[in-house]
Image (cartoon, rainbow, N blue to C red; front, side, top):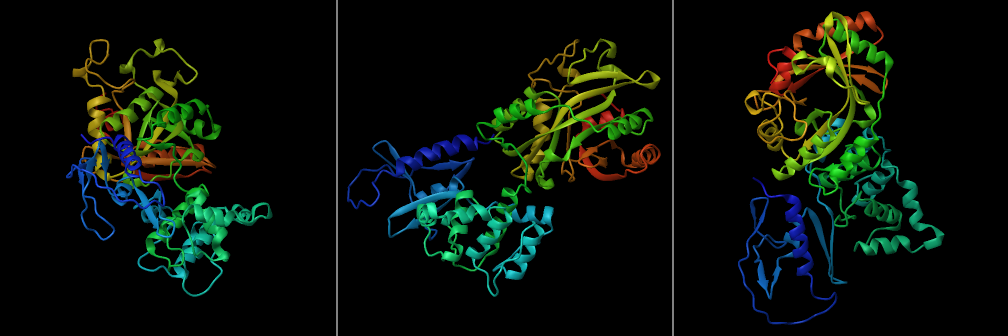
Length: 486
């Protein structure tokens, strides 16, 4: 099992504080006794501290305090580090560039990955694709000018101009000095200062240098995020406050409806074209990278909170978003006598033709963008062990005889829009039908998509079906096919 990155980061943060014990500006000489050869592990991987030239340096303890190189420590924490020799000041700031920036820009905006020095033409084309405007200059493009363009694309131009307001004309110089940034021309100074304060740029950038590929992708991705066109999520699974954020999000959800789509969805079930569907609203979409993402459906908020805790206990991190949905699906009589099911504000049953029943439930899709594909693949085994009912694990009343998460289902639903390496995941079709910002998602076997299209053409000919691949866990596939209840 992996060690918790949150706990490790806390330990390293303590080391950071302990290692900075000499007052700024002081020049002292002191002989100390040390205990060398201290070993540090980061998520089960041995950390080999090096200096700026790549030379291995030692970690040691002295008088109860552990010391390690600040640069190595910062890199372990995902931070950048800069040194100002004139003021003898170290700046630890900003997370290093996300290695998925290029992937995201290509997936959602069609921006091809950059390489080497980025030309003005290529950067301008990318700016337009994210909703920004081309740069004003000609010739080679500096980082400072690219920062200005990113600030404008992020919708922060007016903020940048306030840095030179008469009420505090020194503000721009004060803010740049706070980050240890020097040598930025007045043309771009206010934009660079605003970019640093909003996290669009990092203090470690060489603002006078030619724009490189990594910096270009970072600036564009920052502009996308600040303008609200990037990922839409609550936080990381490893965040200490993720549990309260999940609870708050769930408490904020209210029933929503699109009468045209719900009527159509019910007809799909009644006519046997689908076993159910989910009604969703685009405003909650996570906009995650499909390659690393799973969608996990459920109706119990306690289950979601415990699931995130379970991921942390397994050392697996992920970006987390909770998307509400109104789920309507056929209730199977083997789940229990439908006439004895108590209705609640978020759950009720309704009888339809042929003695069948539809369930109307307020649910959620927990979207998880994992750090790695390996972590995404590991999710299935975690659910099988801790959040999935089986006949040989329950008593005669259906209660688990082995510990499971609260509200665990016989047929949990988790899916990927990208083919899984685990061959037990089976292909279905997500037949998306849209009405403005609302959409319903009746799933079907690939060969049955035509049945859904036929019902839509008959009941709502002005709407269309957009079918896409969906790879689902075996238990839900069994539900769709009627093969088994587990």
